[in-house]
Length: 419
Ligand SMILES: Cc1cc2nc3c(=O)[nH]c(=O)nc-3n(C[C@H](O)[C@H](O)[C@H](O)COP(=O)(O)OP(=O)(O)OC[C@H]3O[C@@H](n4cnc5c(N)ncnc54)[C@H](O)[C@@H]3O)c2cc1C
Picture (cartoon, rainbow, N blue to C red):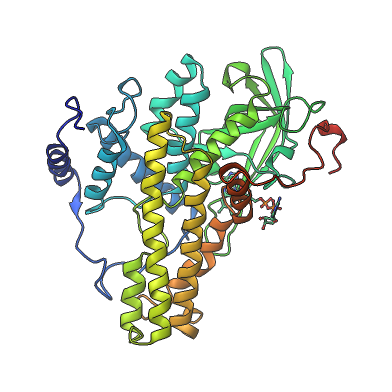
């Protein structure tokens, strides 16, 4: 049934197109033309810190323009500067926007707008919502995830970074790792252990930690693909006021689960061609004269099927998230993430088969060696945001209701767990 209070979709799209035409340059239609435009199909940026900062600045400036025009937070309520519209309007805008030249996406940008801002909406006090949500959605400031530690990744609830109360402050000491974009972030959502005497999930608390506070040391990690998207973050007696605690003392695991659910739902939901697209692979197969080979045709058909399934899942997750009211799709988000990483892995296999040695030796030919960055980068997303194995466990236990894995540390105080 039509909701008469909603703007007419065609009118919305026309207005959006007019705004985009006035604010950005139309993209030349290069998606399927072999040899035209950039042949970048990388999953991670291979940029220097200065180049990455420059990319982020352009992206943040573009987001501010969109936000001020009403297109930067389409599904968010008016009180947070959003347009208060259903997800279908956002999808329509994103489809229009894809026809224009806009700055390339960046992980920290989506962490800020799609993971942290909605988490603050669910757990933040009125004061925190007021202080953080609009600036994060408008990307005046970025926020990274300070979750993983050297001894706690899949078993995130086993993390050891301590936050000890001291008056109306907390003193945070420990080490985080793989913190994407920490070098560009004003804030970090840090999960810390505030009570080691209770079970591991119960003793955690979340904080919005200022990254410029004394005692925060961010050290970039060089990746196999060249750039340094993520970092080690050392926290040495960092003082965080209690007003920056997100959620109750001991609620850190609930905060974590919600952020991770947003992360899984966001994985692969972008229409951006990060890591290559179906059109790119088909273009490569045609260029290599391989589309008449029955075995390759079979692999391509499988890949196309995965691509379609993945986009149908994205639609389904968006509908589930909208139905839940707070944008959280729940554990089914793991299905979308797993389909995305399966698509990326299979894509790597198909292009590796097509390219053979051209994948490892750069002959300078357009659209060939560039896939090397895809093949080296794609496995990263089988780990980030919870590995494939962990997604399968979530689907098994929380979607299908299968018997849970044995967990010997269940009910055991953190201090008594063997580590
Ligand atoms: C590109 C990238 C970006 C990231 N960005 C961030 C970030 O911004 N912030 C942040 O906090 N973290 C980030 N991470 C870290 C990420 O969340 C962890 O790497 C991930 O949770 C896995 O943890 P681990 O590396 O400690 O591996 P481990 O937990 O040690 O896992 C090693 C292997 O064992 C398997 N395994 C572990 N436990 C089980 C089990 N119970 N059942 C079956 N198999 C299991 C895993 O699947 C994996 O294959 C990022 C990681 C990557 C790759």
